[in-house]
Image 1 (cartoon, rainbow, N blue to C red):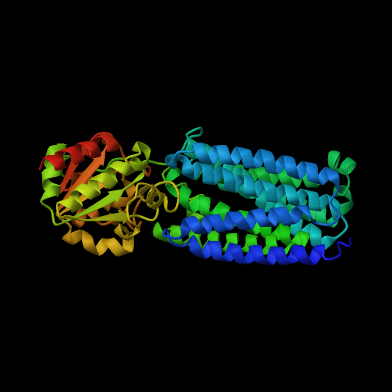
Image 2: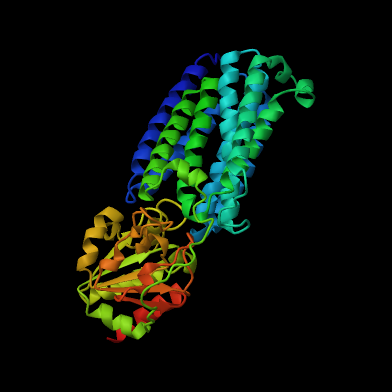
Length: 468
C-alpha cells in the first residue's frame, strides 16, 4: 500500500495541533478555564508526538529511542506531578522549563551535525543552541534557589557583568566561527578534536549559569517567565531549521506569551527587565533606618472579635501562607466570616509568592471562588473602606517603604493595606522581607502583629470566631 499520503496527513495533523495550542493558550488566560486549557495543550502535544512517529524515513532505531524517551520521561513526569506539593510548584515549573530549553539545544546540536553544509540551517540551529543552553542552566539555577539547595539571595562578585558579557561574547564568537568553517563541526571526529560546536555549548551553558546567580527570590517570577519565553524562541528556531510548522508556531506562541508575561511582571514591580537581570535586587540589606513607633502584638481572640463585627475584611496572602499550607484554613476563615455577614475579598499582588499566579493557584486549590480574588489595581481603592485587613505571610508587597525616598523598594507598586482602619499582620517573627528592608507597615498605629505559624494561627481564628 502506498504511503505517499503520509507527509500531507502529518502536516494536516500538525495544523490541528496548532489550533489546539492557540485555543489552550487562550483558555489559560482565565483561572476559570485554565484547567481545560492545560488539558487541550497536553492533548495537542500527544497528537503531535504520535504523528511524528509516522514521519517517513525513520529507522527502527529511531522508534526504539523515541519509545524509551516517552516511557521514561512520561513516567518520571507523572510521578513528579502526583507527588509535588503546591509550595514546590514554582521550582517544578523552573526545572521543566529548563528541560525544554535543554531539549531545544539538543535538537539544535543534531541539526548542526546533519546540515553542516547548509548555512541557513546552521544559523538557525546556532541561535537555538545558544538560547536553549542559556535557558537550561539558568532555569537549573532558579530551581536550585527555589528548592533551597543554593543561596536564595543574589550571589554577586566584582566584575560580574563584565564576566557575563565576555562569556556570552565567546559563545557568539564560536557560533560565528562554526558558521564560517562548518566542516569543523560536521563530523564526529571534528567534534571530538577541534570542532567549534562544543565551545558554543560550553560558553552558552556557562552564561546561563552565571546570569542567574544574581537573581534573588523576589525576582524569580519575572525570571521564570523570561526563561519560559526563551525556551519558546529556541523551539521556534529549531522548528525553522527542521521546517516543522508545529514547532515554529508552538515555539512562537510560548515565546510571545512568555515575553508579554515577563514585561507585565516587571511592570508590576516598577522595574525594567534589565534591572531584574542585572540589578541584584535584595543583595544588600537596608541598615541604619530608624523606625517611628513600635511593634504591637495582639492575640487571636481579639482579632476574631475585630473581624466578627467588621463590615468588610480584605485578606492579603503572601509566600508565608504557601509555606504553612494555610490556604484551606484561610478558605474556612472566609466561610465563617461570610456566615456572620462579613464581606470578604482577597488582594493578590502580581509578584506575591514565587511565580506568576502562585497565590491564585493556592486559593483556587482550596476552593476560594475566582470572583473573590482581586489584583492590586482593582483592590487598592478599597483598602480605605476596609474595617480589617489580614496580611498572611506577605512582607515586601505590602511595605509602605516603597513610598519612601532612598528605600531599595522605592517605586515598587504595593498593596495599600496601611490605609485600612485596622491591619493585622500574621507572621512567624519580626524578620525583614526578601529585599532586606524593614517593613514600615509593622510600626503603623493601626497595625497589630499576630505571631505564629499561619495554619495554626488561622485555625485559632476560626475556632474563636465560631464561639462568637
